[in-house]
Amino acid sequence: MARTILVVDDEKTLRETLAESLAEEGFTVVQAADGREAVEAFRRHHPDLILLDLMLPEISGTEVCRIIRAESGVPILMLTAKSAEVDKVVGLELGADDYVTKPFSFRELLARIRALLRRSETQAMSPEPETVDIGQVRVDLAGRRLLRGSEVLPMKPKAFELLAFLLRNAGHVFTRDQLLEHVWGYDFAGETRTVDVHVHWLRAQIEADPAEPVYLETVRGVGYVLRRPDGG
Image (cartoon, rainbow, N blue to C red; front, top):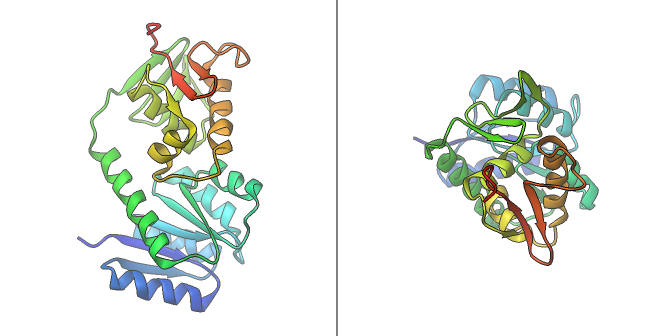
């Protein structure tokens, strides 16, 4: 069955060119020209992946990302003319899975799309325990929630994926580049600060004292490791 991709961009020529090229690669393509259309198309067509422009009329791309991420874990690849690192971090904070700066080559875009789809399929097929306890916090992997007692703690989508990956590989030390490749789906060359931002968010939730982490530790000169809940 052909995968459905929602292409959201107010530049008609770019949008239609992308739609045509993706269709030639075997994808079913749905188009939206503004943020309001994007949300409506997402809810109507349930796409397998979304290409989302950051600068949109009606509703901004960042707001569209926030709305969709509150309802679904569908892969979101943001498109933008902005290249500043702060813009990338904002997109990732809202739950985007990848970030491409215009202009880009279709070959590169296609490679990232396929990587995100493969990762999404692998996560859907891989069985894992429903819950894992870390100190006073319970990680509900199936429900993608973090709980302290009966309280559901706020958790950014990508931070949760990072936590889930580290839990599956507890005790193993990963470099920032490795974490970017495994969790974000490809190598974010030069964007390793993204990992540090997400680790900061995670520690604020799972550590009793984020400044003195017991579970999610920094291995100086290498990267990060999540110690097993039993201390391993």
